[in-house]
Image (tube, rainbow, N blue to C red):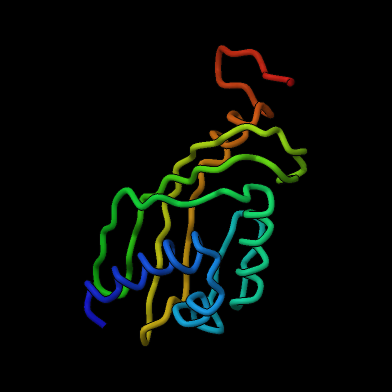
Length: 145
């Protein structure tokens, strides 16, 4: 695949498979043995990746990613994303707050044979927890309600 084809696959993965929660597109774009290292574990396969996303979107049902920048070279596509959503479900032990969040993520996607095979992501969890009121920013008091 060309670099442009890889960028299209990346965009479809974010906008159609993930933002639109389209399982058929997810299966079309992501390899069955897709690997996704996370801070707490490494997910192996589409089903664990789908389950992880389900937990995330249960907590933020209106959540969506906005593609801010894309850089591609060879078989790798890197995206700078903004995630926006409203905290309406339990997330990482935090009960729903009803707060809207706006956090940055960097995602690096490796593509082989026309499928996403591996992804590394860095989500601004500190910023997310500060926006939920779980942690305070330096010099600020914690929001407890």
